[in-house]
View 1 (cartoon, rainbow, N blue to C red):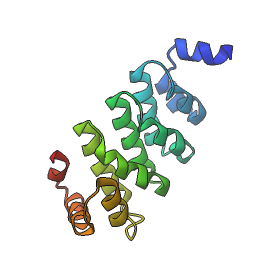
View 2: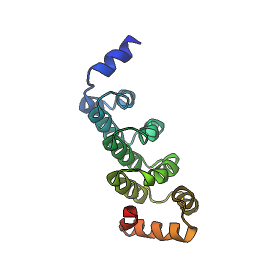
View 3: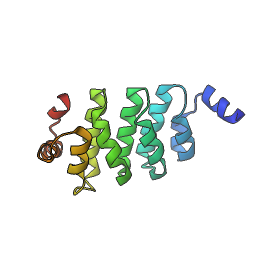
Length: 150
């Protein structure tokens, strides 16, 4: 309990945690009160491609800070775990355009590991027809993200 309180008060050194490959410490940093620490921790987890952080990063997609949500999306794209696909598609509805652009890039980076399911997931998440979902996927593949501005 005291360790948790101290950890939330004092800023963790994210760069040192990353250099030591301290994934557990970086996951803890995702709950720090300072959004900058949370964002840096998410980015570091992505750079380390820490699969054990996927669940924590998925939770970070709901963070109050758009910077943290964007960093979590970046990290999930770098890690490339299939568990992140549906939450990432859901994040295409994020209020922040920056987050939505990062989601599109992450989905492209994931390489459509669940390509057969992705149109259905996208259709349901965005409440569009499957034909529209296929068009959106084609736009993402070709690097066109105009659909995010709708």
